[in-house]
Amino acid sequence: MSPASSTKLIDKFGRHIDYVRLSVTDRCDFRCVYCMTEEMTFLPRKDVLTLEEIYQVGRAFTELGVTRLRLTGGEPLVRNNVMALVRALGRLPALRELLITTNGSQLEQLAAPLRDAGVNRINISIDSLDAERFKRITRVGRLDKVLAGIEAARQCSFDRIRLNAVIMKGYNDDEVLALTDFAVERGLDIAFIEEMPLGQASDHLREETVCSNDWVKEQISLHYALQSTSESTAGPSRYFSIPGQRSKIGFISPMSHNFCADCNRVRMTVEGRLLLCLGNEHSSDLRQILRADNQQYLLKDELAQLEFSEENPVSVELKRAIVAAMDLKPERHHFYESDYAQPVRLMNMTGG
Image (cartoon, rainbow, N blue to C red; front, side, top):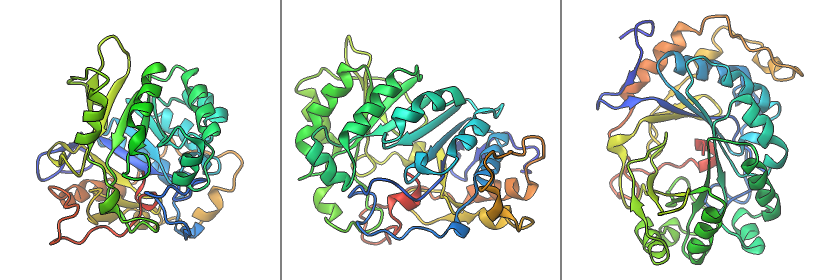
């Protein structure tokens, strides 16, 4: 299958890849306990893809049939000049949805520009509604800024806004209902996410804090009549509706309910490593291809106004590498299975 003739990315298990998550930074203004260690070492600048290089990858994927791109981090909105990238991606003719996952700290200023740039849907992480507990989980985050960011996003007519909450035993497992109420009262969706063993956390053992979504769903069902729906989005969340309410309640359950058979996505880390599976190390190095004929990459992000190469053809070699990488995508992850080595990269390095 040649890049020129391919309109779909199909892996060796017959899964159609139409959704790609692009990390724009490994840095973040929070230090969430499940995502980072307290003392982080971030990538040197020379190892990080420029915004133009990220754009070239996003454009290549859309020309290979991908219809959804999500920007992640770290915290994507702390990347310098990131709005230039958002605007450029938003103009891609084959793109059906441009999405972003954020901690919400920058949304009070950037929600409206994001919507104007073409972002359709936005996911906002919020793991507690108690200011002190929120700071414990994020280590440095301010709940009031996130709440203000959520309100700013609500005023911007995004197609959907979804809150994301990682529920952990001993941290916030008593806030399941409060978080659900918060979303329902505002007509927002919410997804509860099981903590995954990505890297070693510095202040807890993941196997002791992971909380099954079966239990989370039971707690919500005591107060809300959850009805199963066939609705799906770009990702793995399984949604339930509440009669008379706009909100959808989602569950992302990689630990208790393996959903690998339906996987339609890959992700690229900010250093250009194309990860074929969240729970495995199978990957392809796209940075090497992007920089093969470009020795001036470090200068480009210093420009006040980036000019993305929308007319120049995407590298054929880049497309070939992406197509070839589909054969590296494994059948499934093996979280907590003793016979398999678990990923050592933390979530901020993976791309949220």
